[in-house]
Image (cartoon, rainbow, N blue to C red; front, side, top):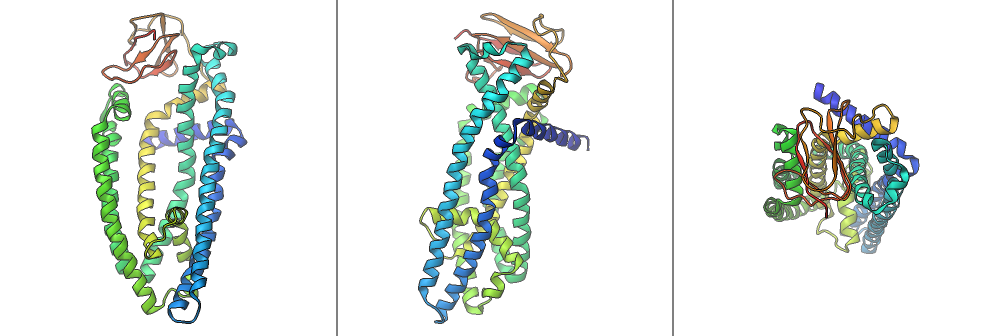
Length: 402
């Protein structure tokens, strides 16, 4: 439980930091996802009407044009979803600019007791950019987790209820269809994150940078698994689509009464991402019931992403705790301009560099201008003018100037 309490504490710190950024920043980042929550209800209603029109057309009780019309509505919802996505990118960029201007400079000025005017000089731009990218990536991860986890669980609940009531064999087929997806995601998770729980802070930092920047072979291997996942899931999706479409037309249990029930509505809500993507791309599945299979696959992808993000947050949210201390003024670096504290190993091989020890956090700070840093035993790209927060006992060599 101690670890769980630590995770929750770090998440609370991150949420507090998000709150400090202001409502407009959160709105810019989260608005597309929140507005996208309205589209599933519209898609569920339009999808139900499409099924009704299709069943009526097959029974010669209605015109096929009604089905085509409802497909047009679904395409419109797909394009709306695409517009929201691009709107999210645009406003996200605007919010990123606001984040850099309003938070990062104050954070660094307060942390290292540097006047704000100095952050306008060229030698500090890389430093600010690096910290801004790190901060905004973690904040987006937290926001996405807060939005995606509840909706994914609701969609999963609706899917289980629906399959249990309608067609038990389809649930078996869908379960088989998720195997290659879980396989591929598990390989990725194991290669990049899960093994890190056994590493020391120094080894974990080294593995993290190597995985992101150097390990092309593992990325290629993951692409092979992803390709197998795609081929197998397409075959299973086609089979499940034909089976479900045949059953629905023969038994006619996809009429209006079945379409409007709550489990069905929740299920279609969970399939919106796949359905709107297909419609926006101008591609309609052979059987739209294939979206159930894709819903489970996407749900498992989301849950595995959450698991990976959770593991990564355990490694990276320490930065948020430091930032919270800076912003609140509760903690302050001590001995920043003093030689290396006993027990810490910081070396400046080229250029002017200073080492300090922040006693409250047990971290060693490296501060240098026009100097690059490189993590030991890695070939991570050097950054100029960076202040590095190190784990206790970690070694870093300053190898600039550039």
